Length: 323
Image (cartoon, rainbow, N blue to C red; front, side, top):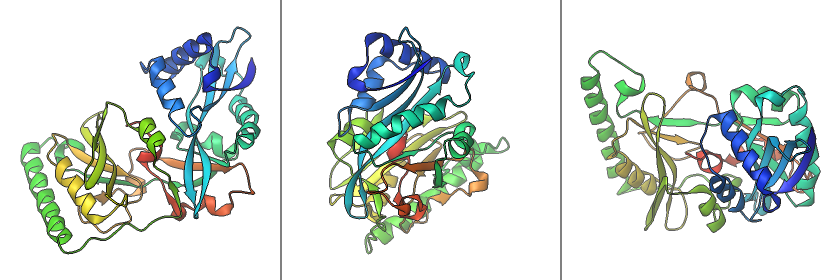
């Protein structure tokens, strides 16, 4: 087996075919080539960085992929890579250090291309590997906020479920209306964190596809609807005023629209940093799956230890997920 680093524009047809085929096999997906090319080229470099675990026939059996994005880091613009779509084919996992070797191979190349750090949100199965073997740092566990407007469907509750859903719907409407009244007299802006994504056209093209609903105007919000295992969710990805700032009025406006959808719950993943009485924060112990936010500093001349302090970050579902 060989470990090699290429950029998206260097994919051969055989590499791309085998990458897509083996990724879909590992994750039980049905993505096509265009999905990955769109994902990996809509960024500031118009390409991403890939470390392949392959054989002499150019068959890609595993991959570590890094997409570069601009971040505002304490007032200066830096490039931070998002690690995504990591996999190794089940039949090629005889080397337990393969992922370590792959990351060590690609890391100096990232530095040469001015990528100063990486972040990732690995699943629980591989979290310990990245932490204990590769020595990535835990930054925090992402916050999950929920409006279970059909609470009997979410929990789930069998007895008197229809009545319970009606009660929860009415209760949330009352809470929403109280927020709407407050927004007529007060409009608090979300506290701005010191490390945050720079949202530009590149990122918009990367993040949003036909599966997402993008609403623009004086107040804008982004959301997607997703079928979880047992219930239907509207994920609020972003909300902001015409000044591109998260504030109370834009949140209330977004909630007013999303609550009209035929979904069981509304979810926001990330730091709200704003007064509201509708979303409930799910305690870490009650999370159905923990979203481990991790990172690694590549260029210590650019990024310092503040990078590992969770309270410095504005990071959530908007930054990393495809929902």
